[in-house]
Amino acid sequence: MAVPQNVTATRQALGAVGVWTTSLQREPAAVQREAVARIEALGYGSVWQGEVVGANDVFAQEAVWLAATSRIVAGTGIANIWARHAGTARAAAATLADAWPGRFVLGLGVSHAPIVERSGQAYSKPLQRMREYLDGMGDVPAGLPVVLAALRPRMLQLAADRAGGAHTYFVPLEHTAQARAVLGPDRLLIPEQAVVVETSPQVAREVARRHTVRYLQLPNYVNNLRRLGLTGEDLDGAGSDRLVDAIVAWGTPADIAARVRAHLDAGADHVLVQPLGDGAGDALRQLEELAPALMP
Image (cartoon, helix red, strand yellow):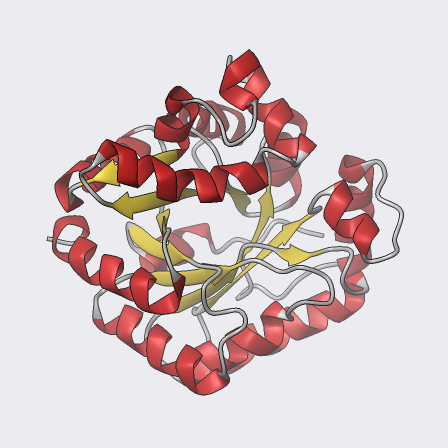
């Protein structure tokens, strides 16, 4: 797959801050339409979601989102390469990019062994699998930016060599600077940043640990955090305070905006805030509180 020459245009379309959410995946289409329209009205530049084989189809859902809005960019974070043939992924993504020019970013990822194996597939050699998938996609249209879910140096290098950049997830701030060093200046870097608008350390960390406990069961994330110097009790259970505070920004909107700015200063092009809490309503409430601080 040839590297698309549209990174500058995509940076401009995205702006500085977008939204990453799992809270809409199982909601009725009417609820999703209303939510993404509200996110757009608040001024966020993009809205992204993940994909689990058999649970949701990101292309179908994001067509709903794009049809319900007029400006905001929709991104797949990620389209799971185990969910469909590479040619089918290319065709679906190209259709969205053609129907809504400049408003769709294809994020591809290898997911995680426990998740893929629950779907009845054998998970092996993720880096090789991604290379083969990109080969299978062939050249993509010029108007379709592609980023790879990447944590460690070899996948980041593949994102630099074969795609328009990288989408990083469940990473501390220091990872952003390291990722930018691998990608170089001419590729997109789009990190996710989990957030809780809450000033009580006890309450904020309790909410945060409902998030971290799930991801600390996935070897790809744990191995990356070990590489970054987190060990022992940091990675046990739902994580130490040190880990929770590194992964989840909490506090006032100003506190959270400072973390977002730190990612941008470290080399991120666009930071995706993921509000943690109780469902879509709580996520929207937090996004409303954050908007004035994130987009003054």
